[in-house]
Structure formats: structure tokens, C-alpha cells
Length: 493
Image (cartoon, rainbow, N blue to C red; front, side, top):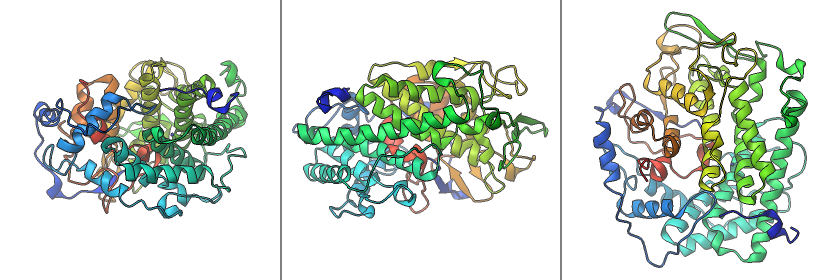
């Protein structure tokens, strides 16, 4: 359902997900078809309370709601082990998180009335509200719905929240405030049938101001510092002071990766540092609200950012400039952690555009363009052909199953850019974004990896995505209530 901003005005959006892994967690791999049959056998006989009305939104369809309502009763991913050994109990976790929300208006209960210089409140702000709204959507829980409504109305009327200024720097407060707005919009989208016409006008005006704030800042920075004429499609004119260097300051390493023979790949160009996970989540927020307001300018600006990221932040082999964030203790931090936020951000906007029948361009866009080594056939040209979201996902999947060995700065197990950190004894679970990717691509390899049946992947150890004592999320990872519950095994639906 899409709304025009003029209609309602009268004239008128993460991840590092980490879990400790021990040798006892390693299980025998299941056959993919067997694992999927366990998941998909739960589907097809939708059981839901007849009193729950049909409902569609910008971020979900009625067919998805039907599946979620059935899964909340029958599984899979309702309770631990209900799909396969150690499958996570995501629905139970959603309900538990939703039950933590109270009517008290403070940051612990998803209400913020401070200023944007404070980073911490935004990192998980709105998470419980989004979970409670999802419970309302799936179960028709009127108590949860009323609580969410009160939270959203209080937040959009908070006097100290002013969407003013120019957030041209991708600081963590800007990043986390964008993910907060995306979570709050999900909560609104799930409960939108509860608000009066007058309340919707107030809420929509707040979201429009937020979208404009982020859109202005994103465009200002990239126009001022990188491509002065990007709005006209001119990428020959560059701000040389910010784009010419091939070894940017504060980089953890000069090259994206080295292979098993010790050969270095992809000298990191300065220009690629402008296209990073922080700006990606801002572009996600702009894209989501652009879809909601049917604002083509916002949609175009969001898509333009992601197309520029593919041009200047991605190498021909599908690795990213974001690999500069790999560290001695976490050699895969950039390769899997930060890079997955970029991928996820693009996937989310692509899904929202496709679901609302606007376009599928981000799924299919490809290019040979780049600069200082990110162009196909350039100084780093050992790639897979034209760069695209699909090819980026292929490279990402190689890190998860170890089918291609990439190291940070020397060939050693502790420097391997895989899904398990030898130094911190933590496991990166970013492969979950492949659930989202496969709604469109329906690619068997991606399914094998997120189901953990592919050779080289680490089977589920029982921890719930984003929850539990060892779970930690950030970036866009907090913009969805649970990947497997929402999207795993839905390639054929």
C-alpha cells in the first residue's frame, strides 16, 4: 500500500551478529532437501484467528502475514528445535522481547527525547516496539497494539526531536538514528490500521521530516566531497582531494585480501571509503520512506547511492572496500560484518521496491564502471565480470563456506576471513541475509548456506539470531524481527 505525501498533508531504514561456538556445537550436516522439507512441511495449512483482519503494508504482504500467522502456531522457527536440531525459536524470542515493553516513557522503553549527539540510545531504540507491533500483526493482540500506538504517538510528539541540521558525516549517531527510524516505521506499518486520520497526518509528517533530513545529508556529502555533478550523471568530474589516494588514512590494511599463495588483491582506493555501512543504512531509510510516500526523488536518491556503491565500493571480484575494517583480532570484521550491512541495505530497498510493484532494478543492475581499481579490467581486474548485487552475494557466500580462502595480511589460520574468529571465538551469522536475497534469486547455493547444509558451513549451535547472552547486533540487522521466521524456506512461495 503506497501513500502520497500530498494526500495526507492536505496540499499536500546490523550487523554484527555473533555467537560463541565450541567444538560441541559442530553437528553433522543435514542434506539440504531433507532440511528444507522439514521447514516447508510446516507450510500450507494456515491456521489463524478469524477475528484478525487482513492487512498489507509497505514492508509486508498479506501472503507473508498468512505464513507468519501459521508459523506462530505450527512453526518452523516458533520454538527451539522445531524445524531441525538446534533451529532457533525465533517466534518465542519475539514474544519475549515484545513483553518487555512497558508504557513508561524512557529510553529503556523505546522513547527518546534527547539530542542527536547521543549515540547510545539509538542503537536498539525501537526494537521492543517493533516486536510488539509484529505480535499485534500476527496474533491480533489488541493490548500490544494499543501499547505500540501510544509509543509511536508519544515519540512523534517528543518536543526535543528536531529533524534539522545537515548530517553530512556518517557518524554512528546518524547511522543508529536511521535504523531507529526504520524500526519505528515497521512498527507503524504493522499497526497502521489503529490510527485516526488526524493521527496519521502527524505521524506521516514526522517520518517525512526524518526522510528529508537523511536525504539532504547523504546527497550533500557525496556531492561536496566526491562527485560535484552526480545529480546530472557526471562521474568524470571528481573532487580530487578526496578521491585520488589509493591508500586512505586510518586504513587497517592497504589491500582487501591476500590469497593462499600470499598474493595481494585489491589495493584500497580512497573513493570507496565514501560508500560504507553507515551511509548504506541511511540510504535504506530514505528508500523505505520514499516507497511509503511514493516520492520518486527519494527512491531515485536511495537507488543512486547503491548503484554508486557497486561502482566505487566494490571490486570486480565482488569483494568490497569495506574490507579495510578487517583487524588483527577480527580479520573478517569488514569482509563479513560491515560488508554484509551494505549488502543487506541494498537487499531491503530492492525488496520494498519490488513488493510495491515499483521496480526490480537493484536486483538486476550491473556495471563495469569504477575508479582506482574498482572498475572491471582495471588495476584490480581479476573479477567475475560485470559487478552486480548477485555477484557480490556470490563472493560473500565464499567467506561463509570457505570455498575461496581469503586472508587479511598474511597466510595464517588466525587471519582467515571466514565466519569463525579464531581470536575471539565468535561466529559471524551474517549468512542470514541470504534468506532475504533468495526471495528474489531463488539460488540453491544461497539456500544451502543459510540452511547450514553446504560443506564448510557451521551448523546451528542453538543461539537465536540477535538474542541471548552472546548475541549482539547492529546496523540493519535490527530492522527485521527475525530472518528465518520471516523468510527462510520461502523460495517457492
